[in-house]
Length: 196
Image (cartoon, rainbow, N blue to C red; front, side):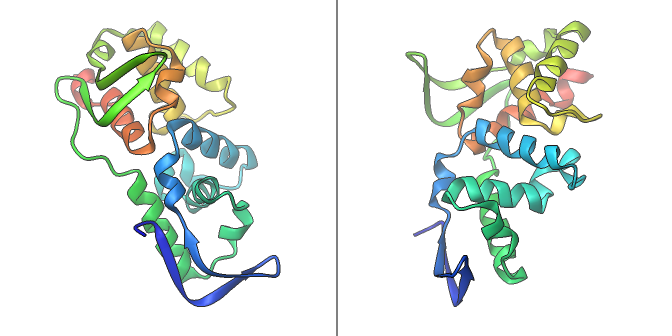
């Protein structure tokens, strides 16, 4: 199995012995899962890395892995460093996106259905027409989730809010996207070409 980590020696957590860690649930996670993980980590105030580079934050990696496996985050917090590195690599791979948006259009790896509509691409070129008011409203949408940072562009909720404003689609359209598609959307709405 592609997202299975076989352990050289058993890992014991809550008096149960584990010989493998199944991260196949990563394939089913959405942008909303990433938003919830970011919100969870920020609410503790213990992790500052998430404010600048979420996918580099071990706390964020652990929170996403917990969502993928259904195990408590403490399961991942206690992993030995070698296993921690393997989990990190697998989770970070779930955030890798092939290809970039061309002319503000994100090509999806698989068709995506929402509200009776199925799309294979998302036109985010409307980001170029957004104004300061739109940015302010997007920031306020993100604040409602409990997330705030001086640099909002790293947050999936902010990307969803901007994408929703640029396309006229509801924010839930974007929060339901698979993780790797979420990274494409975040990259597209923050593309330097829109800010020249």
